[in-house]
Amino acid sequence: MKYLEFKDIFAEFPLISSSHIFNVTSKPHALRDRLTVWQKRGLVIKLRKGLYILNEKDRKIHPSRIFLANSLYSPSYVSTEYALGYYDLIPEKVEDVTSITTKKTAKFTNSFGTFLYQHLKTSLFFGFTEIEDENELPVFVAEPEKAVLDFIYLNLQDLKDKGKDIFSLSYRFQNLDILKRKKLTDYARKYENKRFADVVSNLISFIKEWR
Image 1 (cartoon, rainbow, N blue to C red):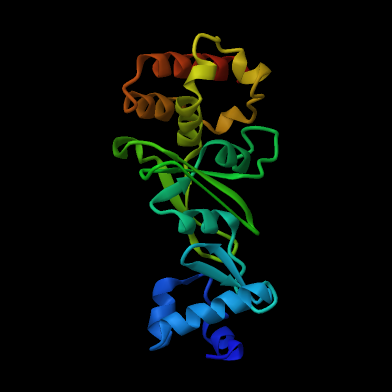
Image 2: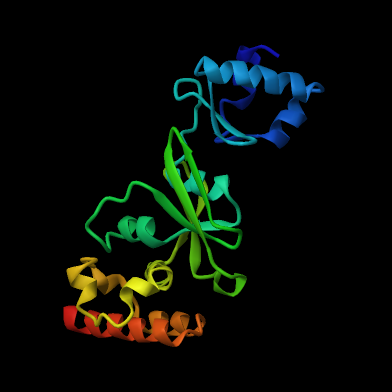
């Protein structure tokens, strides 16, 4: 298969997977060899093993980094620092896209940046919502409350026994009016961790004072 034919087939695909390649040719191994050549020429970008995207000029859809994060490692949803920045709950711009997964912790780096995945057990894989990115592609992002709780849970060693002021002094939380205290409390119970619950209680006290 020539590149022009490959481009015409996949120009409107946000991503190209191994299964797509098997579906368009009777010689997938030969096409994979061509992919290696096209990568070296900058025509195709490899995101991870078995997942590709056309170069910026030739692709008609430019997927968001959130969409890429969901697709690189599934099941997953964007949460913790990146989601906190997405909701403007912290002032810092977060470069690495951070996600939660039920799989083992993982990290992928490609031309779109670094994508980090932290493991949570299946019972804590909840509290995310499906929205559409700028291309109207479906993406999974933690609800604001779940993004905060995931962050606390995964940074518990740094947050426990520190009191409520740490949320303003060390992490500079802001725009807390978007957080629903009841949802924070209800979700926090599912983590079944006393030290975690104490930190969440401090957060709720901080929110009350902040308002």
